Length: 348
Ligand SMILES: NC(=O)C1=CN([C@@H]2O[C@H](COP(=O)(O)OP(=O)(O)OC[C@H]3O[C@@H](n4cnc5c(N)ncnc54)[C@H](O)[C@@H]3O)[C@@H](O)[C@H]2O)C=CC1
Ligand SMILES: CC(=O)[C@](C)(O)C(=O)O
Ligand SMILES: [Mg+2]
Ligand SMILES: [Mg+2]
Image 1 (cartoon, rainbow, N blue to C red):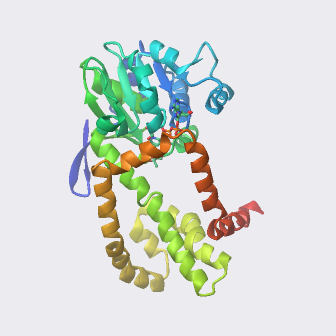
Image 2 (cartoon, rainbow, N blue to C red; image 1 turned 90 degrees about the vertical axis):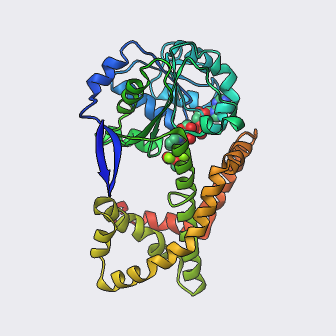
Image 3 (cartoon, rainbow, N blue to C red; image 1 turned 45 degrees about the vertical axis):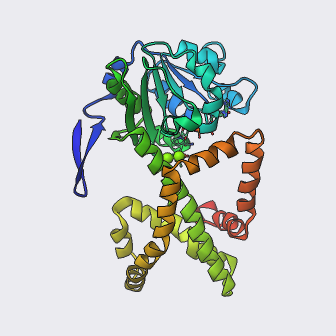
C-alpha cells in the first residue's frame, strides 16, 4: 500500500505496480465473477474483466433491451449469459450492478445465493449505507466490498480500449474470509483502474451523491442556464450565448484544466480574462456554498436517497426520466448546442 500526499494530506492508495494484473489473475483464478445487471456499469466492467482474462458471466433479465445488448456484445446465452438468479448461483463473486432501486427489488433473489465465502461487490455505497431504506443486509459470512469507478461505465470501457483507464475508490464493509482486501484490489485492477483510493461505503455514497447533484451534473447545468439566460435576456443571439457558456468551456478550456490545473488554464487566457476571473470567482463560491451545504445535509440524512428510491421504483420511472431529459434537450440552450456541435470545424 502506497502513501501518497495529496496537497498536504497522506492517503492510502493501491497502485498497479504493487498489484499487477498477473497478481490479480492469480488471486481470482478459482473465482467466477457474476456481473448482475447490464446497464451502464455492467457492460464496462464485465467486458474489461473478460478482456483482462478473468472468468466472467453476466446475469440479466431475459426479454430486455439490456439482454439483447449483452448478446450483441458477445455474451453467449447459456454459457456466459444467464438469468440473474442463475448467474448469482454460479458466481463466487457477485457484482451487484443493477440500478440502485433495482438492487432493492432483486435483493431477495440474490440473497438466496450468498452462500458462505462468496463476495458481494457494489460500485456504490448506496445499498449498504442506507440499509434501513433498502433492506440490503448481507449475511455475515460473505465478503462485502466496493469498487466505485470515478466515471461513467461508458468512459470505463472507452478509456480501457484506448489503453487508458479510470481510477476507482475501494472499500471493505465486511471481511468474512480474511481475503476481502486482496479480492477487492484484484477486482479494481481487473476493471481497468490504475490507482485505487481508499474509502468507506458511507464516504463513497455521500461524496458521490453530492458530486453528481453538484458540480458534475446538477450545479453545472444550473450555472450554464443562469449565464445563458442572462446573455439572452440582454439581446445576445443563441449561438453567441451558447459559445460563451458551454462550447468554449468544453472544447477549449476544460481540456486545459484537465491537463495542468486551473491556474494554468488562466495563464493561457488573456490578462484581461485573468483579472476578471480572479476578481469574480470568490463571489460565485460564496453564492453557491449555502446550496452545497444544504445538498450535503440532504444526502447525509438520507432524504436524497429516499427521493431517488421512490422515483426510481415506480413502474413508469423510465418514461418519466426520458420525458425530463427530452425537455432539457428541447430547451433553447441545448437546441442551439446541437447546431453549434455540428459546426465544429472537424465536422465539416
Ligand atoms: N452509471 C454509471 O456509470 C455509474 C454507476 N454506478 C453505480 O453502479 C451501479 C449500477 O448502475 P448503472 O449501471 O447506472 O445501472 P442502470 O441504471 O444502467 O441499471 C442496470 C441494470 O439494472 C436493470 N434493472 C433496473 N431495475 C431492475 C429491477 N427492478 N430488476 C431487475 N433489473 C433491473 C436494468 O435493466 C439495467 O440493465 C449503481 O449502484 C450505480 O450507482 C457507479 C459509478 C458510475
Ligand atoms: C458516473 C458517476 O460516477 C455518477 C455520476 O456518480 C453516476 O452515474 O452515478
Ligand atoms: Mg460517481
Ligand atoms: Mg453516482
